Figure 1 (cartoon, rainbow, N blue to C red):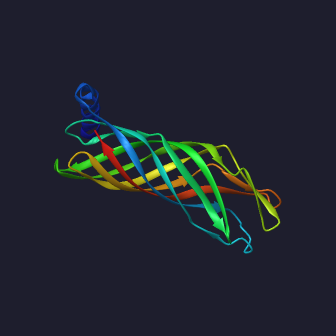
Figure 2 (cartoon, rainbow, N blue to C red):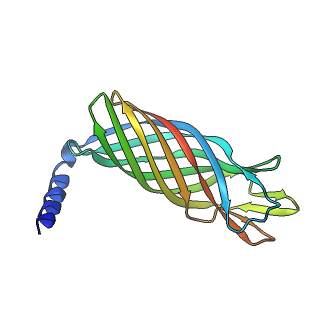
Figure 3 (spheres, helix red, strand yellow):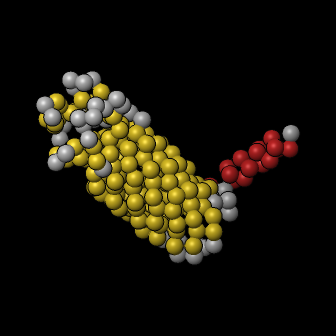
Length: 192
């Protein structure tokens, strides 16, 4: 019963602090190391990671004293893979929204973040001919983020985030195999 009271007290405290919430905005960018995970891929397809980048505006809303809050971004992001000498690359507008927890002193804090993202394909190839088969990219993606990082002097954040795609973003037509985006984002954000 004590746990229920503590949970109710924490919820009331969380609802009481939005007027004092700490809002920051800024820009986030960095490198993507992405791949496409195909289920039941034949051995004739050997895939490698593709390096790209991401950049865009970001916001952060944190409740004071408890170190809990949200961050969200609108990121232009390049994802894909390499098959042999051919690069399969798509450009997405990704919108991640994460629950974030920070701990530390004002000069240096560590944080963990997790949440969903959605993505909309902006460009890059739509259909590629690879090894006498066609790989087609789809227009929508969604998945989960999980990451951690460090905040320095309350304005610079450096983080590593793993993106786990949950929707099928690519399909190999003849083999009827679908693939999901997967990858790492190594980011730096400057917040004001």
